Image 1 (cartoon, rainbow, N blue to C red):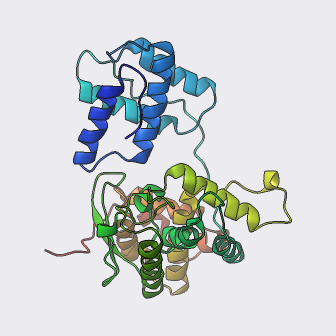
Image 2 (image 1 turned 45 degrees about the vertical axis):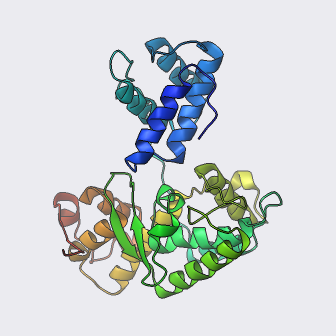
Image 3 (image 1 turned 30 degrees about the horizontal axis):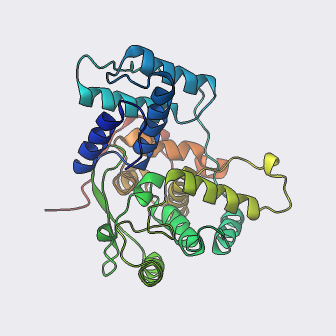
Length: 320
């Protein structure tokens, strides 16, 4: 648990314990509330109530400093306010400044190969087990289309190394699902788990640092950026397109759609299966990936735009 400094620290700790018990929250939530606690420790050190001045002051400072993840920060402090109850101040739903949506960078086959080759040689002096974790974690994100947070939150008990079933809990929409890893990915997971257990010993989380602590989003972002730079040694890093961990999930979706189009599958019939596998709440979330496909695929006769844009479908992959 984070070492909170402000008078709100005990309440934040109680909230995080509650969220853990409900299988909600995560490392991001802890981190964001840690930032809020640090702000309160500096500006409102003795304040035990969640006031408008403290909440809005912190959030406006994050905006002014140009810090990222504003929506996630707003959600975290809003959920904390609901936990505390009245008269705690709740940040309005429309507080996040409107910006253009980030356009994902879809890696080409050659870029993907170079990226994973860089991951195979990734090292970090202060974290010797980094070189074991990097290639497996990044391949899992791509091969299974996981959200970054879903992979980071995986516990040892969530991965069945006999069947390849991976239990995804505490998802973006708080809806659990099961996915099945391919044989080659399962082999990687088995080998990684063996090396982890020998090198580190017992651990709660599947992907860990050398001290058995779980990796967080900042570790993963650094890893992706380092591998991306190392995969393009002849290009100035400032001239490289921005690559985020989430873009591996986007690449997975576009690869699946490309394969279905090449196989002349009916996307209208197949899309619900991709939706269920990726854990999307709405059909439009999955259909979004068609709109970022390369032009030759967007113009394929396999894409029925009227159906994709206007119809919502359901599919049940797991029967009771």
